[in-house]
Structures are given as C-alpha cells and as structure tokens.
Length: 263
Ligand SMILES: [Mg+2]
Image 1 (cartoon, rainbow, N blue to C red):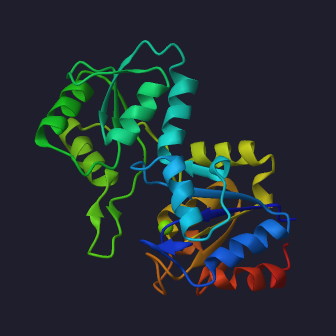
Image 2: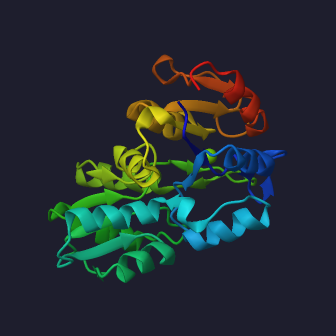
C-alpha cells in the first residue's frame, strides 16, 4: 500500500518561478489523503528554508522538515563517514554549500592539500578552484559531489551543473567520484526511507527526469511516476527505467493513483 509520495521540484511542481497548473492542489490532496510527503531537489545552491519560502510563495503546503536538498545529504554523509571532523575540506561550490559544511563543524580550506574535495553546482566556478581541487585529488583527497546533473535546465537555455565540473576533474585526475549525494543515490533513498518511516515499496517518486528521479525510485524498489512537464517531456525512455506510470502533468496524479491497482 502506498504511504509516501516524494516529489521532485523543478519540472514537476513548478517551472522556474511558476507553479505548474493544479500542482499546489495535488500536494494538498496528498496531505488530506494521509500520504507522508517529501520534496527533494539536487540543487545545492539554496537552503531548505529558501525552498520552503519558495514553495509557500507558490501556494504549496510544504514544510521545512519535508524538504531535502543535496547539500543536506552531503552534510549527513560527512557526519556518518567523517565523524571526527578532523579533515580539511575544499568545496567547489557556492556559499550555501560551504556554510552548511562549516556549520556542521568541518574545517574548510582553500589549499591544494585538502583531505576531502566536494564538488557542487557552482556558478562562481573558476580555473583557480579547479586547480586546487585537481591538486588535492591527485594527492589522494576523498572525492565527493552533491549531485551528478550535467545541466540545470533554466528558461533561458540551461546552466552547466555539478556533473560538468565532476567530468572535468575526473578526466584530469583519472579518478572517479566516490560518492554522489543527491538523486539517484542510494544514500538519498535510504535517507528518505529512514525519515519517512516506511518501506521502499510504500513510496512513490514523482519526477520529470529518468536519470535522476525515476532511477532513484527504481534502484531503491520504490514506485515511480514520470510527469511530462520537464526534462523528459514526451521523449523516449530506456527500457530499464520504465516508470510505473507516465502522466502529462502532476495535476493528473490523484486520478492515476486512484486507478492504479497497486495502491
Ligand atoms: Mg526536476
């Protein structure tokens, strides 16, 4: 039985700065029907508080404790794996990510002898930052990233995202990133299951992307429903990532859930 719904944000509930038609009512419908809710984003450039504000401004009944960003996941992973906080960290990322890591008690550095390198979506990326990260990584620093997305879709043509910086550093260092915190990681899936207090088959992931949203759900044994309002649109889907449902927009979700035999 379905107990929890995990919504992607951009391309699913809103597009840029506009709620998708009917999307706020669907979130209210889900809450009224007793589903536990989560709102997830791979974007590490804003805090959970900022997302809460945005969602509420767009008329969504969303609470801060239900919002999960890749920054929050990265910090939670550091806490699990580096609990002593004795390592120095170089962040290829923006202020929100650096602040969150520092507030969790970690020491940030801007030197090439960092023991951990964390790559995030960074619109302030410079050659200097790439050089520091490269030097730390070839000396054996741990190699993590907030999210794997190559491109962040925007109304004016998109932005190179963390995956692009990761690809450059992987090529230069001949190393592979060790852990990527955001979608579609098992780290996120475990975090969701733990925080929701449900089993994976009781969760439904609703999102617009195959490589992050649908893959997160499928790899973790959750149900998945693709909306056509975002990146995938009406395009083809690889056979191994066929979602359980495909709807034109999130506005059609209540009808889909009500007709779906597995719920
Ligand atoms: Mg999306």
